[in-house]
Length: 203
Image 1 (cartoon, helix red, strand yellow):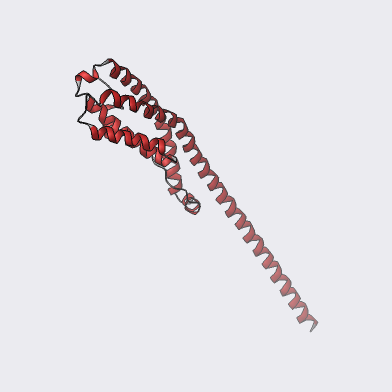
Image 2: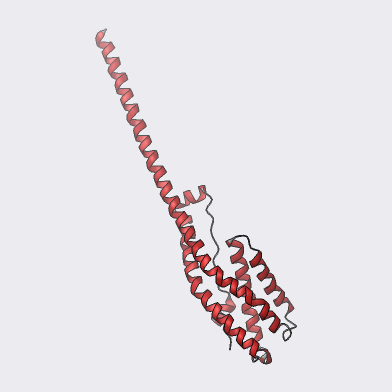
């Protein structure tokens, strides 16, 4: 009887030890999983912050371009009175940019503004009297300078955004990205007109 009792005690002791070991292993694995998740989360936050920092650098220049649009409209609309739709599109995009509440909306408005501006400049070349005027010449120089600054900073922004967008789509980072609702961010695109004219170029 004593032997059976001792065996039972030993069995119960081993069972408790095994349970304790199992709990320790589960706890360690849980800690590793949490640490892994935190590491990925922090990396995604850092990538998103890099995008925000790059956009802050270019947003200043985008605003300068938006501020130049009323003067451009004033100088060109009389000579280009048949292009009212284009002027409306440009003015609307500018207003959307200033009314934007977040980076997504600002980028969308800026891309629209870029396309409309490029189209306006291309069409303006069909009006020799307009493009030979002193006011237009001065404005086109100012616009070109701003466009060059945008082109320089856009590359850094788009690179940071692409890196972030890639990170949230790749496994296993996508698991954390989906859990914490990291969403893809838009790029500042280059319109076909801008590619054709290598930015807002004036002849």
